[in-house]
Image (tube, rainbow, N blue to C red; front, side, top):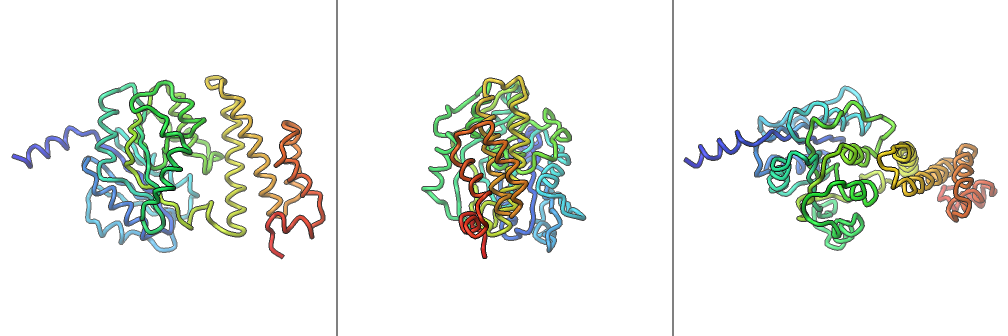
Length: 334
């Protein structure tokens, strides 16, 4: 009798597509897949998209012996965004949820968010709070509290929010990359421009915000966000500079697009400020990459539009300083 009830329950559950993009993180990937497989919400497909890792993780995927898992290995590296979007486009579920290969979910993640979407067809997404864990999977209590406060999730009331522009685009409270379930077929995955790059999660929040649908917030921490040394922001040396340049270019594209959208004009001053900050960040990144002439063009543009920004002025001064003085300030090794 219990088996019949379980089967009937599963048949009544809408399919959820779990997207797990991965690249060169076999041990973390194994943990991420395990957290998806162990979901108490069972009607899922798990789409593991390998971005041409040095060693294929196919054996790791097969070790789970779970028919719900589908595996693709890209013949060449598509870039982070390309691999992520590939997974979304392959999804057949009524709902989609992204799970980065270095993060994990608690067993009740889907079980507590999907029913909210099922109960209210006017919602496009449901999201929750997160734990922060270290490279070994240990919860960082102070980091967790800081993360919650930084994204103002401690100030969001549980339940439905409509509109949710401020929550999604100003406070950036919605972790679309790892702690969010989205109604799939409202989003046109082909419409996401490649220039968005690493800002794809904020851009996805934007698409959800302008959809006319609402969002549901569940304040419980149901996901585990991992901070470790392999992330772009933790990389050292030239890779770190390149990561900052990529991020700044994505921000410039993203915030310019937001500024021009008449549906969110009340936030235009904020978007403009972030756009100009990205110009300065790009200029500094280019200086560190020893592309001085190009760097100045971005710094001058930022200065013209906000003359009294100390960070921009300081970067401009450094760009005209002799190399022997500028390099140590910029952290450029001899």
